[in-house]
Structure formats: structure tokens, C-alpha cells
Image (cartoon, rainbow, N blue to C red; front, side):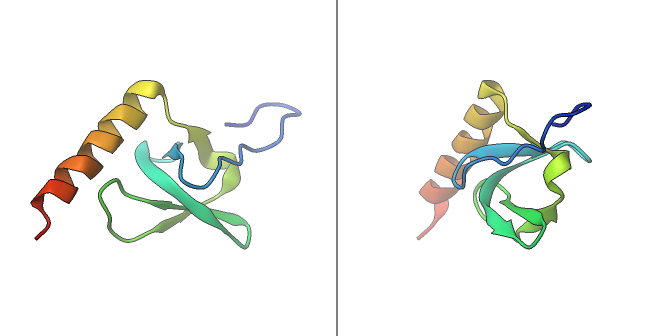
Length: 77
């Protein structure tokens, strides 16, 4: 998240972050051009998020996202 005079957040690839525009949590896949790419926990289509709209996921958000990933992995053949 940004504030007056602060640089935009640039989370590490593999970490969880929140798209503050709509509250979605995603795993950071990297940066492409001016955007941070996020992927939903458990897989799915990546989406682009402006760096100024990305904030690190809280521990609770990250835990819930990781549980979704593990649950999905258990359902795969």
C-alpha cells in the first residue's frame, strides 16, 4: 500500500498479497511491465495489479490462501 511519499509495495514472488482494489488474495508470480501478476490460491488465471494497489497479505489471509492451495492439491488426481 502506498502513502504520501512512500514507494509502492513490491512483494517477493511466491508470497501472498492482496489486490486492494477488490480485496482478492493472490500468490505473487512476478512483475510484467508496470504490473504485479497475482494468481488465485490453488491455481487459476493470473491477473495484473498496479503496484500501488498491492499490499502484503496479513498472516490470517496468507494462512487461508495456503489452506485453499493444500485442499486443492488433495483433490487433484
